[in-house]
Length: 114
Image 1 (cartoon, rainbow, N blue to C red):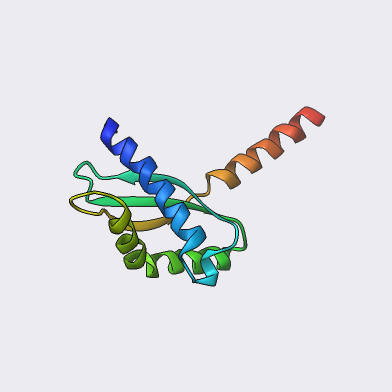
Image 2: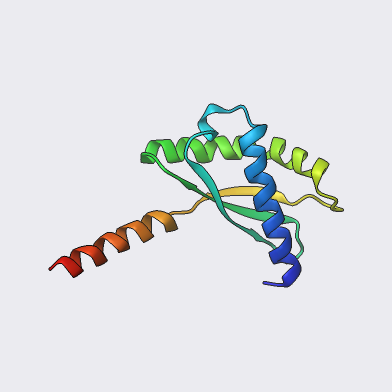
């Protein structure tokens, strides 16, 4: 990933986190959600936003649907704050890395106890 993609990814991650905290009124998107990573296409036109969601499987599916329904709002808000020629098109994806890390840590603790 090029340096510009990385820098812009960090800025978009921070901006989306701020928007979720302050501007989004969808109750599905308020609880236990964090933006973990943003991957940009080489032309900076598309951004995959990975979110970590704590909750049941049905909650996770509902929240991803909520994120995807809020895409146009988030893109519009980002275009007001970011000085870009083109605001990247957002797509939201579930990131299970935190859960995998917790399971791995639990397995390591169990192995060390034995």
